[in-house]
Image (cartoon, rainbow, N blue to C red; front, side):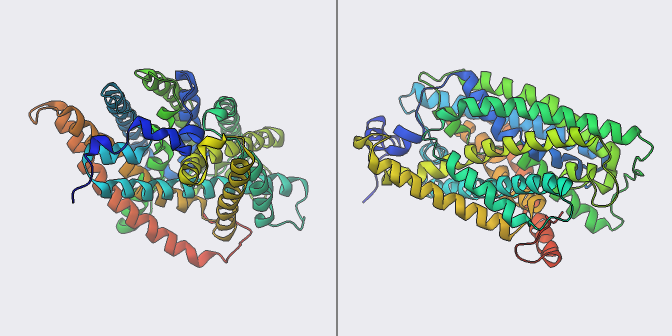
Length: 452
């Protein structure tokens, strides 16, 4: 017997008993709050990986890929906001990516596909945020006590405890002040890192610069696609509908304003971090440019106090990023398990929230400690997660919703983007997983070093 019409699968009235909608995705925000959430989701310490991505592309292709990714993602998110606004005007306001995709594409399988991809993204970013935060603590500890006994996994455990406490903020909207601070922190550490790179590049101890690519043609191809996947992950967020859900209705037009705020910050931070870091270190750039500025051997290449403040800023922002990308997981867990009728702060719901979110953070922290693959995790998540959700699905959803004529420029731009990034995603997934396998020989479980 056929199921209910797609238009009736996600009725507004059904959300009265939906704790994921009523609690986690509470709709009270303004456009600038969406801007804060978007900026935290996109502009994070992963920008310190951009010089590392450039080393697989070189100057010309690096600039080209960075610019194209920026234009395409802004266009993609703009189309997504138009689709969400269209559905809201039709009386079907979607607050979840999976519901939006299933409604428009008419496929129940798409519902579960999006859940799978978003889970991969959320978990990957959650692991990466905890891992990098632990590495930040390790950097500060090593500077103060070079021969200290504490290991990386112990710092990761400390970060996990803090994340467990912070994860008890009940709603996405309740993170707005934290995410505003996150925006300021991203500008702060970018300015500090750029200044440190300029200092390092002009000092008498400046490292020798080599911008050459790998000698083997096959290695160059794999490195290039790995770098493209990293850049895709840096620009991606995969949770725009959930961020849109935090806006107080009517939400029409508000997300576009938030996008302009976010991309203003992107223009300032992405290019400055990529250019300054790659200019100084070239093909020796580390997956975390802070580690290049603070080498294991020899003195720091910039004033220690500058790098120390930058590390603290990065550490603080990582908590915000971990929280933002955990919201979809929290919403999925609480959609059926929490009881809306008893209220957000009832004893039953608070205890349940504490247990579920604690277990989720412990899970992320455990894998962060066990598999210290920050750069490689970033590339794999970009290929299998962000490219489908941010470079392919929005174009498809727009074409299915607005039905532009096949003779129109918009239609062919969207189709071309889907085809190009499907190919890039497949190649990126292959090359990223290949590098992950190769790097697996360089470390042991619960290693004290993050593998580049």
